[in-house]
Image (cartoon, rainbow, N blue to C red; front, top):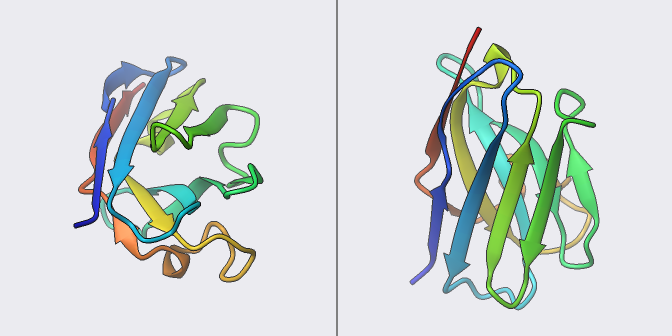
Length: 125
């Protein structure tokens, strides 16, 4: 049974930082591509960061230079260090796992087969 469990969400003031973590288990890929997605109320789910099996990272333009994605293959954990948060970063954040490779693109939701339940991030101005 696949499980992806996120943690680390919360409330923070603009300019602050949060670190999200995800622990995964049970998926069939030996070295999956892992991603973080967010969904704000009334908006579509968007990919914000991903890291593939070879360490290749991708970031949405809106978070480049502010956030860092990392993973520990042995522990099957995925982290997202979020700095310089703004109210526009608020939303539900989801961890996802999918097959490695360049297609579908790393920040496209269709690439990922497994999803966590999400953790909420609220950034106040």
